[in-house]
Length: 253
Image (cartoon, rainbow, N blue to C red; front, side):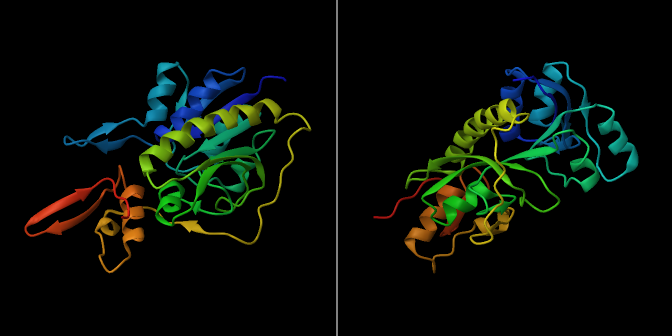
């Protein structure tokens, strides 16, 4: 195995787990891309993403472009001379020019068993829908939304006690380990890219606070799944008299 020059692009805690794994590997992280700092907390103070905080702790150069569509941002990326760009919950679409820049292209760590649950909230939607399993797919990125050929997959069960937070944390670790495994093999002929099946495609819409209110015309099973899926965010709720109740765990009797 020859070490790769890696550009890492990601933003939340889920992505930070993968960055930490690559930093502990034989590969060299030459730069990190992440979303611009956002206001957070009661003071609405500009706060760096978990990925930026980890990158700065390791003295890595950090880039935070609002878009990767302009020529200057693309030239900046090309100058890094990376073998591969790793993308994990970055939050920006990559134009074709960016996908074509690294020698080995761009690979993505996605928290679902593709082609099921393409899109923004695959972890929570899998629990909400009653799926019996979830997992991580590492794919070779193309211009579509989570449509690239699959390089590697790991699976994990979803039980009647699995919450969104539980599954997030489990997949963050499994995805990080799978990513390093793929990077170790990426520059050889041992990995086979498999096109995604055309059947079984579903989309995981972004979560919103508006959908967290429970609708008691739904079945007990649907309500229990939603409560578990929306823990820790946006947290399912209902009213009882004048009180608002936040529900974190539920099972069907």
